[in-house]
Image (cartoon, rainbow, N blue to C red):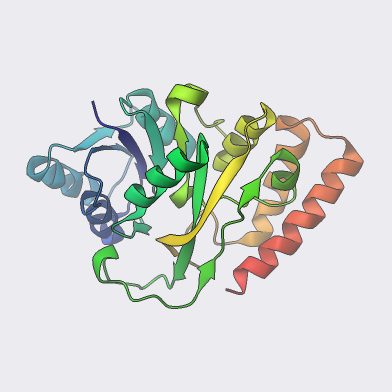
Length: 257
């Protein structure tokens, strides 16, 4: 069985999908399975996925029975994971080659079941691979330690860098929300008393300001953050207001990188 199960949701991502998959297959830690759920793509995504699967048996694509959004697509992949660790990568982001090796070493040394790393931001039209990336100075820096209270004021974890230990935490699924489902998962883990540890080294590439991205319009996230605080975390009105103000401030700062 693989040590790491990598979860990737796909929807009409043919233009960027190849680079994302190659960045997983090029990892210096090779004991992985790449579990991909195609969520009703109408472009060439599924054909591309099947070609990768023919070339490398670590690639395991499936079609969702019906289009249900990113959370359902991720959960379908998580449900068939065999790895001790679950890691996440979207189909338009990339990992640098030593990402898993460095993060696994860090998780073992820190004794941390939930870890994340710093990452680079690149433009939407970035056309390189993780293996030939030249550092650009646009780094979203990981905090060394994040607990539940700190997480309420900002989602400090870039989903493309997150990894959790199934042996310590069990198989954890994402709440099936339209947006902020990854944030909700990290909060649920931390609410149970598990903090997250951050590795300062940037080990992934995030495509910023991409057209049609769920995260491209920061203002639209306000309503989803509010629903998360009130309906999912059941925070009081004053506490939700303070958390929302903090999240908005940190989001503006991060968008300037």
